[in-house]
Image (cartoon, rainbow, N blue to C red; front, side, top):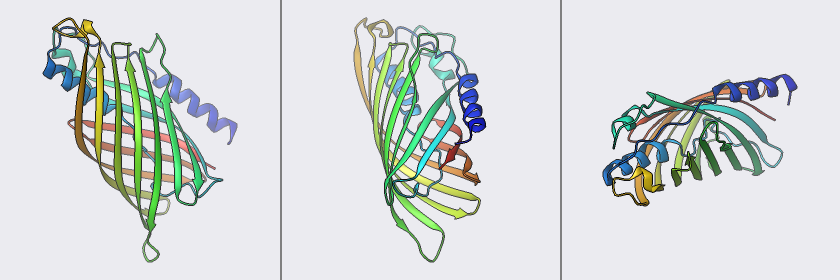
Length: 239
């Protein structure tokens, strides 16, 4: 990997890092479920990537993404709190081909007291079909994510996505649909009943994205629709 590109990606990661969201206290049951929908599902795994497999065991990918979750409505919950319109957070991501059309992915933002947020995601992608008569492919992605916000809200999400992509070199366009299951643990200080709660939720989501690749360097933009809309941008390199 060119050292210059590596330094640029790390710089983008460092400059994109912002303070975590402030969660309001005194939230009701329904309001806690809403937070799980926004922060739990909103920070779940997203590939933001070329839909085609990495190309076997030798394939490797490194990237930096910036993902934006609309959080303004959280500020009106419970006892209310000053909340930014959007929470933007960066993630480092790695991809590795295991064999043929199976890839492993790992993305994260390490938890720190300064940022107040930590996110760890892992995924397996299986490209189960590539058309020989047309530049199209289909894949299944199984993924899981753990999100920690200020040690007050911790969520675990698991999901499966079905994705289809079409390549028109140097661009790839892809669409997908998926199912997501999530659990959220809320600290007692956030509850109107002054005790800790666990919340469970499920949702379906759709996604659409575009990827452009030039000389092993790529950029991708993706839009995911859950109960809210998430915008993601990623730059990286494939080796």
